[in-house]
Structures are given as structure tokens and as C-alpha cells.
Length: 396
Image (cartoon, rainbow, N blue to C red; front, side):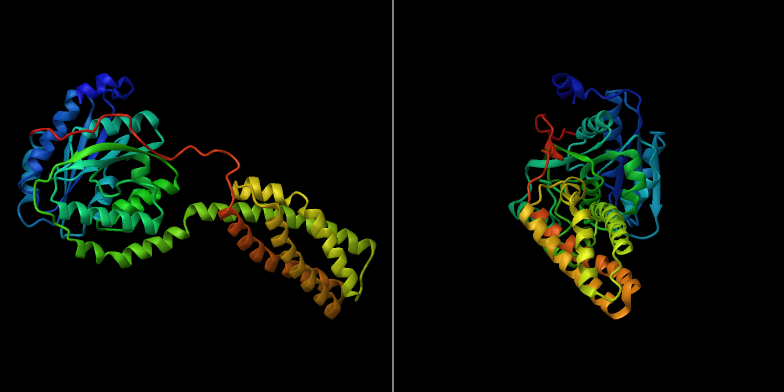
């Protein structure tokens, strides 16, 4: 840690800032005391305050007693006991809700991941204030079958959820404190998919992701088999479905609605003015023509508004006006038909109904165009690797 801090001066931690480290523990009697001591020692070396929150996840081997005994030697340690085993995600949610740190992270109790990565990751989060730091395994000494199954599980999750992350499951992560307490405590997953859901929340926020290269040391036989991971497939699919209705898409839909509202108000104002000057009475063709003129007038700025504001993509002009034309045809037809059936007042109602139908069609069409369009401005990558050597585990 000291060598890395000296080589990369920007990574010197801010002294005395509180960092919270949550340790989810289920039947970790053999490891928990050593984990507490090792984490405390790492932060003492750099004079950074740390609180360690051990969440005993319904252990049956005396993990709670061992953690409580260790807490008498280290006043900054909190021990929380859950009556029954819920899973890693539930334990992390519980620990995050009790945290006070400006940076909040977690590490597995067996310390297969390098504990000396924690102060470095905390420093990265504290310095940027809008990033999380996650371990990314670039080397490990696990058996080949474990590496293969872990790789398959990660690739499956990343593919289904479109996550631009190299390693979703490494057991060391660090987040801004307010984000951990307000957002990550709301995650639904209680098992190993919690890591995946947490990263989805990070991307949706959005926070930058700093991937920290680490080496994993295998200290015991794998607990979760590949079959256990495959059994999580239904939960993964549920997560994928909910992710498709993420806040990012909701914001996009809101922008479309606001832009559409502006166009609609202009459209209705023009149409109202035209039917006051030249009332169509029961002439559906005249009403349809006046509706067309109003739509064209309101749509003159629609291309730039939807390209720049709604989607941030350079939409195809031909595609945009083709989709818009379909919307025009729908709206004009509905307006004309309602006028023919119910007169001028019916035409106004038909105009509004046509706008609703056209909006559904055009939004769907514009989204398809946006998927195949280039961004208007270059977007900085949200995920990047920290420019540091691979962090190795220490001999404990």
C-alpha cells in the first residue's frame, strides 16, 4: 500500500475521514477475527478512520461470538446479528443502512481478495466524489474449474444486463456513502446477484466506475457451484426486465413528453387559430388540411428538439420525417373523421385523440432510429481501469 501511495501521489488518502467497511459473514468463525484485525491495521497505517460493520448472517458456528470478542479490542467495530441466514445481499443492505462513512465498501470475510486494496479504493472514491471503485480480478490461483464457472456467470450477467463491467462478482467494492445508504439499501436481490444489481444502480445513477486490478487468492473450496448460479437464472431475468424500465429510460420518456408537450401546445394553438379564421363546420377535408398545416408548423423545430434534447443522437432526417409523416397521417385521419361525424367541436376532440395515438407511434419509431444513430457529442467512458499495479494479497 505504501509503495503504491508513494508512486501515485494523487492516491494519498485524506486523513481522518471515516470509511465504512461492511463484512457479510455466514459461518466465518475461522476468518472473522483476522479480517477485523487486518482491515484495522491497513487503515491505521495511513491514519484514516474506519468503522468495520460485521453482519452475522444467521451463522451457526459461533461467528457472532468471535466478532463480538474482536470488537472489544477495536472500538470502531460494530457487530449486527441476523436471526436467520438471508444471503450476502441482505447482509450488505443491513450493513450499509448502519454505516456512517463518506465512503462505504465491503469485503468478503475470508480475505481471498487483498485487504490492502480497501484504503486505495476508499481514496479513489473520496477524491472523485462521483465514482465507485470495484475490484477486477486480473490474476488468481483458484482451480481451473472455479475460474471457468466464475467467468461464465459473469459473462452471462453482463450479456443479459448490458453491463460494461469486466468483473461483476469480485468481493471488494467501494461506493460514496450517501449512495450506499440511499440507493443500495433499496436493492431487491438478497443473494450473489446483489453485486450485479448494485452495479446496475451505479450505471443508472450514473456514477463513474473505477476498476482496480487485484489478485484473488483461493483459501478454501468454492461455496457456490455453477448449478447454484444457474438456479439464479429466473432472478437474473427478472432483474433484466426491471432494468429495461430503468430510470434512464424513464427520463428519456419524460424528455420526449416535455418536447411533445411543447409541440402539442404550438400545434393546438395554430389549429385553433385556423378553425377560428376558416371554420370547417362539417367539412372533414378542410379540417384535416388545417390539422396538417398546424402539425407541420409545430414540427419545424421537432427534429432538433428530439435529436438534441430527447435522445442526444443525430437522428436520421429521412427516418425522422418518415416516422413523423406516419404520425401526421394518423392524426389527420382521426381529426377529419371526428369532424365529419361530430362537427367542429368533434374535430378538436379528434385532434387530441390523434395526438395521443401519433405520440405512441412516433416515440416508438424515434427510439428505433436512436438505437442506430451516432451520439451528438463524444461521451467519456463511464468505466475505466485505475492506473495502478495489480494489488496483491499480503501474507497475514
